[in-house]
Length: 86
Image 1 (cartoon, rainbow, N blue to C red):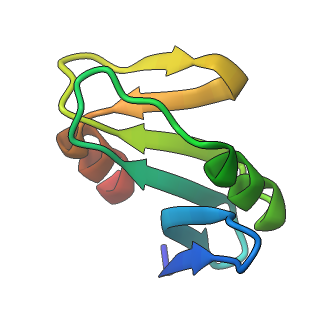
Image 2: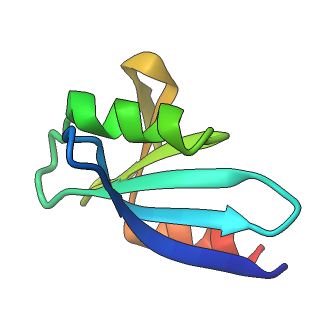
């Protein structure tokens, strides 16, 4: 599947570390954190709205995937890579 990865930031403060736009498919918005108790900012949520994201993913050093509020998926970088190559 072909995809276009890019960074997203607006002057109003919406920001995502990575947006993956799968051509003719979903859009994933991704935030990357080093904390094992990660959170996302209001700017991340706004970026997800701006790009019409189908998935909101927070990459962090965690052992298992889990969800936090507003349907944000928390996962390790290894799990993200596994999903990207699947």
